[in-house]
Length: 136
Ligand code: ADP
Ligand code: MG
Image (tube, rainbow, N blue to C red; front, side):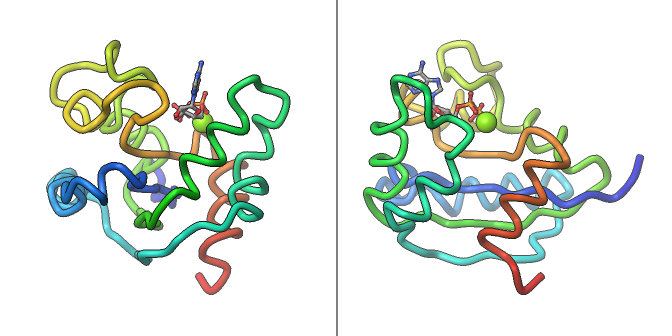
């Protein structure tokens, strides 16, 4: 499998609850190299750009508001098959459906507060990494 990079976010509620260290630890233990990492407060404007693909969804406003509510940790992760491997470690979008041992099962509260973000394909990974880690 080829070495890839993917884009990850530890969402605001995880940071507020003091659980970001546990998530970062699991990222390292699962063989990801954290090639970029920054704590930042995503602006409303950047959130709209980032979630642009969802702009027709009924929950778009809520989605943007939640990610821009308070600081997050954004990361560029590198590994063999990083995009799929990170989606696997996160688990299903809805924490109620996420497999035991996945991040969303452990740290997600519900579908709106589901702990983490991960790119879903090579094209979205390069778009998202470009928005947050243009320097890489
Ligand atoms: P994923 O984050 O697993 O890639 P999506 O790209 O489909 O999922 O959705 C982006 C984010 O929007 C999800 O992580 C979740 O927080 C939120 N979301 C998805 N579906 C819903 C929904 N039906 N109601 C509210 N929020 C949702
Ligand atoms: Mg998605």
